[in-house]
Amino acid sequence: MGLKRLCVVLLGLMPTSAALGQVLESTVDVDGVTREYLVYLPTGYDGFTELPVVVAYHGGSGTSYGMIPMTGFNPMADAHDFVVVYPQGLPDDYGDNIWNSEGPFTNGVDDIGFTSRMLDAIDVDHAVDMGRVYATGYSNGANMALEAACILNDQVTAAAPVAGSMWTWTESRCELTHPTSVLSIHGTFDFYNPADGNIFSMGLKELSAFWAAHNHASVTDLVTEDLPDLDPTDGSTVTAHSVVGQGCAEVTYYEVVRGGHDWPGMWGNMDIDSSQEIWDFVSQFDMNGKIGGGSVEAIGVGAEGANIATLGSGSTPTLGAPLTVDWSGFEVAATGTLYVSAARAEQSLLGGTVYPDMSQLLMAAAVSTAADGTGSHTFTLPDDPTLSGSSFYLQVAMPDASQSEGWAFSNAVAATACH
Image (cartoon, rainbow, N blue to C red; front, top):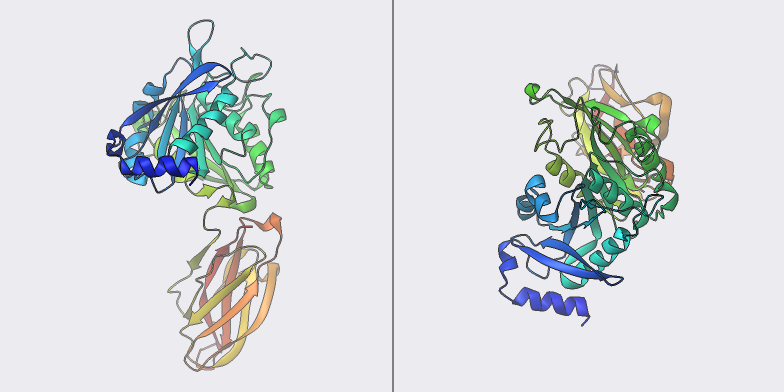
């Protein structure tokens, strides 16, 4: 039995106070310096089940203990079963606790080494899933979270900085090894860490472009959405900019329009809860990208006219792998066509509604429906990394003399595929 498993088993058998969801004070040695961090084991922690980890870096002049009420992560960890780690920064020459970058303004403190050894220690001491380690932070801690995701990419799965960006010199030190999702939350009126960047930090659009390119995507494909203005009194709104890349990794920028140097949901903008948004975002991913691969979404269910059949799939859409679709509800046995396109173009046709864009067809396969109105077809999605995160639109058409225009259709499905 390995050391980690032995520790996990013993911890699982001991009636510790941590089982009640309390905070543990921990230390690790980094080149002769004792570094401190807090570990929160949620109420559901049993010492056996390996839980995801959220590492939350405090802001400049902050503390690990102060990060607990600021984020509200502990009760969220109880609800969703994850471990929270709160590292403690060291004071600079002015006595302010900060996170140090190994760039041109380094003060000699090895916070990357601290993070790496801290994660190694947590892996030994607790039942944690090291394939799901998520870094977040506020202000100076946000920059640290991105530096960890960049330089410790083999240990950090995804990042979610708030009111901070990536130091301009960090890019050259990145060693990126896997699809890495990043959620940024930043106010356009943040005068401490300007959203447009400065000589120290990348602008948020530049940051999104960097991580999108790493994930084999482009910010030219960003999808922009104005989120609901739930609190008109806070003086700000939120616009989300998102792009999906290889492995269905996602890069999203929550642009808090007229927002300041805030942690939205705690103060400043109240249209979003940053902590909840962070967990909802990062928890979707592991080192391979989006957990569970792609998805299938029904479109046009209950459409009138000739759309009489139901099309669906129990398969997970994965590029280069077989995808099986099934249908039922046609009224006659016939041989028709399964259409697969790279885009959606809803239009009325032959007494029904057709959803695949016929000008961008990827496939038109002959398929048959049995006497009971059911059928099935399996085909392989293209093994093309540039299509990862893309949606394919599928629909079945069958000749049917009982329909006014002589054709019957299923609903359509959008199959979003990951690599």
